[in-house]
Image (cartoon, rainbow, N blue to C red; front, side, top):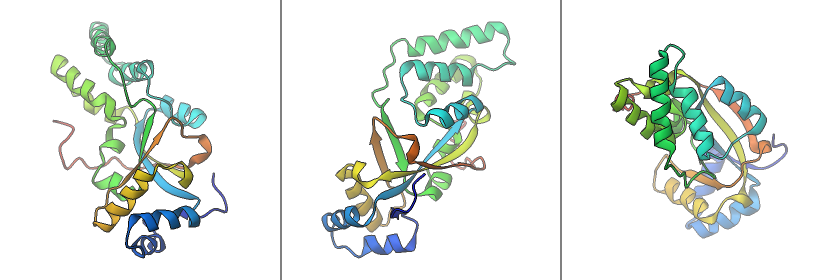
Length: 219
């Protein structure tokens, strides 16, 4: 938990005024690094009870192949499936991961607008990791079962707030923050590589299941 520090929160009027007081991104970044210690950012996800328990202990975990394989088994194989179906689903998951490599295993994406994660880019909160969505589609085609729905139903919808040290943010993402806001876009992101320490996490918030007005569950 971050205490007694200057935190840049994009939705705050004072922070919006701060951005808009600069004519270019270079001056904005220079003054941001002087004035603020942290940037508040948000990660939307869907975690099962076990995953949430692990998160409280370990925080953000690298999405290795073994980690995702285990996650897929726990989320896509249901207790109500008969033994034959369970075995077939496990085999199909194994086949999927046999040649799988996640090049972004050590990358963590954060949005700077909580509202955006609930209303526009709500798929993160609805499903969790995007990495399992292609597998969910493959399993649906194979077994005629809505596996995206299983992702939704087997976890809780969460927004995790983090306080990211400004010094840890690459310049290109600070440039994006300035350019996106000044262009009138509501969506802007931060990419953090390798590690997100537990003490960056400031809040874990349970939220209502987003309304799927884009019909991404059935597509």
